[in-house]
Length: 278
Length: 288
Image (cartoon, rainbow over all chains, first blue to last red; front, side, top):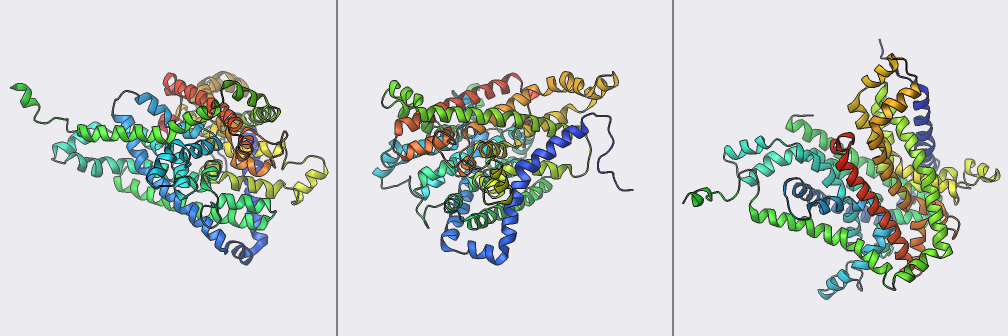
């Protein structure tokens, strides 16, 4: 016998809670995304391809995904190290650093954007130092990378930190007793335990970085073909009332993002299976 | 002699060498300092670069005041709606067994993996004057895009999962037995919710509302697409920051930015206090 759609339960509020949930989900999330998909459907595959297959669009998509992957990759390493330091070491100011990790979550992106630009522009404090050695940060790809590093910083650290707290120290002792060096213990025993959570954080940071707009546009310089990110191109197309072009780029971004998230999900399942606890 | 004997292994087998520790700590402090604390300091330094008086005057300007009013109004509408949704969704997901639960959770989380700009684009395609629905709404005198409803919808989209995500793990952990006991003892549905469930989830609810509010007041990308950036009418605080910044009105832009940064700092402090005082009642430590 097939399982019923909803199992009967003495709990009250079935209609109300499902009503609110499904109504709001539909109006706020599903209907708008449906409108995007519908716009793509009316364009048809050829129309979509024609709207996407332009050098400026390819350049923007390539820039967005390449720098997002790079920034999320750096955050994977940096975030794991940060989580380790915060979970395991004690040092003056640890609590301040711990609280500061969440600042990129709490700080509005436009604020982060103008602040990073003021700091890393050639006439800013750190940008000026970089210029001394001939390194231009703001208004180049470096600036975009920096902004994406900023917005993605908390994701890996916050995903990994609770897992480090849960690690049984006896595992490390056993590894050391069996003659493993500390480095071997870290890479062969600890890292496999952290990897699923680190990948979750990586996926979140990647998704965030791909779509990031506010913190990037101020520091990017926004030169077509060179420092123009895909979300900005959507905004430009919308300002020119080219809804088809905007929808095509939006759909392309969604499709690539979901494909990447799906791949990361598979990697995660594989890494969980490999270490044996689900 | 015994001291040297003990010092053969200068550090325990389950930690890193002192040098590695020092380097990692330096990396952590350096990263946070360069990328997080320095930008924050710059916001306040730029805002106060012409003195406190100039900063305060720019905040009292009509443009800034209308932006502050609009941002407060938007968050005032969007955050309670978000909280209501979060409670309803968490109740539906944790109190009932139904097919498609995983799908529902995935759909609630969906806004996290959609670019805010794409979210705005979706709203424009659905409610913009060019669409069937949008055209009809404009004819009824209820425009959504380039007006307050669009800004609220965009804000709701980007903050959608915040409260639900905090509540679901907490309510899963608490199970249904307390509610079942209340029902058996004759309490009605609302009474059970208000006097049994709500006290159990209040700190997690507050935590989620806090995060949703910070995001609601600071959202830029999604709102930028739907607001139309009409001065004094549809320009929220972040939008006004962009306009002032692009007009090289640095003090005015950074003063508003400082106000939003102060909000972010208050949010962080409250969040840290909540985590410290009520860690057992929050989902933060169980997330993976």
